[in-house]
Amino acid sequence: MAEVGKGVNAGKLASNVQKRITRAQEKVMQKLGKADETKDTAFEEEVANFNKQLADGAKLQKDLKAYLVAVKTMHESSKRLHDCLAEMYDPEWFGKEEVDSIAEDTDLLWQDFHQKLVDSTVISMDTYLAQFPDIKARIAKRERKLVDFDSARHHFASIQKGKKKDEAKIAKAEEELGRAQKVFEEINYELQEELPTLWDSRVGVYVNTFQNVSGLEEKFHRDMGKLNQNLSDIMTKLEEQRLAKKGVTTASTVKSEEAANHSLSESGSDAPKSPQKNEAPAVTNGSSDAELPPSVLYKVKVMHDYGATDSDELDLKAGDIVLVLPFANPDEQDEGWLMGVKESYWIQNKNLLVKGVFPENFTQKL
Image 1 (cartoon, rainbow, N blue to C red):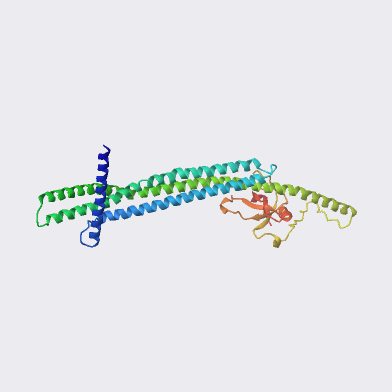
Image 2 (image 1 turned 60 degrees about the horizontal axis):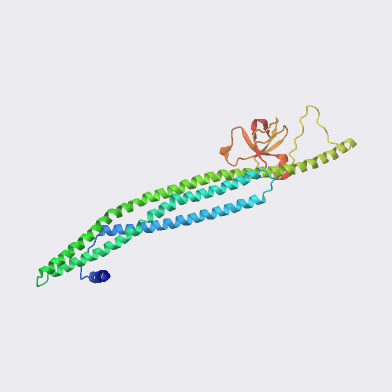
């Protein structure tokens, strides 16, 4: 039994070797112009499209994976940055718990973004490209079967043209030609059906891939923007907390100076003149217009007390001087409201950090 098996394998091997020799001879004859070659221009265009489609898909797959690596790197960098902030943030500072919560939410948002990109783009791209190796192998097989068909066709034609007609050889050559033609036409028909469909499918793959990427990016940046805005607001509050503590120290110094001035007034020397009853108090801006930042539009005087009702509003007392500033985004300005900084704050700190909105009809332009 084993001997029979060895004989079959040896016979098959010899047949394959003979086929390769015959194909090589046929290709040489065709290149030398001594044998005509069957051409199919339409199919060759489809093969060219197939090769382009495969190259484009492989490049897109490579770039998607590089994009995912970049997302992963940004995730790790973001996490290290938030960890650094958490370590530096003192427990008594404003919003310590909120800062830790934002760090956790940011980390989860990056993880979700990365995983959804993998699920919706990379996996589908891998599936799309998985069909190409089989089709590529069948295209190569079709080329070999076409050479076999041409070889059988030329062999049959040469026997028919021979001086001595050998009907047995002619019949055998005709049978081989028919078999070669059938094998070629079967695989050729399959590929003629599959290649145009595959070529057309690339559009849907590209649409699906980039819709998923753009949609996931849009949602990710929208959600991340909210977290970043929350963190920015906390940093603003922390700065206000610092300035408020600094203001307490400044207030103590002002009280000491007032006490000294009071002693001088009691001694009767260089005492400032008090305003008469019903006389408007003199307005002292504390600094010339030339010393003000260029972003200040003009000054207004507060005519009536105004108690702030929101965190972005200024708390004003009658007599306060306010430096009016432009809105960073003019669309955010509500009718009848201005943005500004108290002049007293500017004089003490020489910055415009603690600013807020206030109703215009409570003030008078200077």
